Image 1: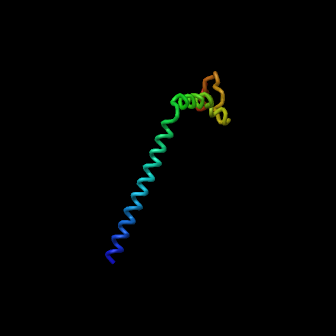
Image 2: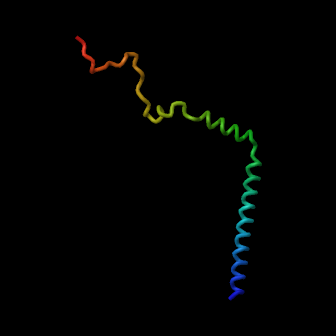
Image 3: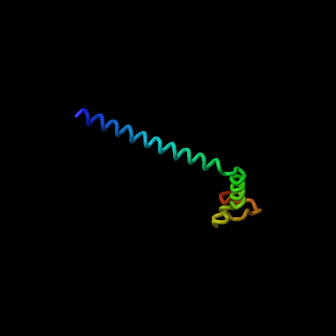
Length: 81
């Protein structure tokens, strides 16, 4: 039985080491792919996205409030004599 416990612990250690190596390889690949981008391209994409953003998003959805009136609102509770 002691032989099996040692073998199991060794297999777990190898498995965790393999997972750590895979994680580090993916992390390194992500860093390399992000560093390959030009910062100008990222800035240009952000500018284009901001320029294409709707100026009046509520109006485009059709839920904008009505036009302002030039008359002051009348208070219906006040009494005039």
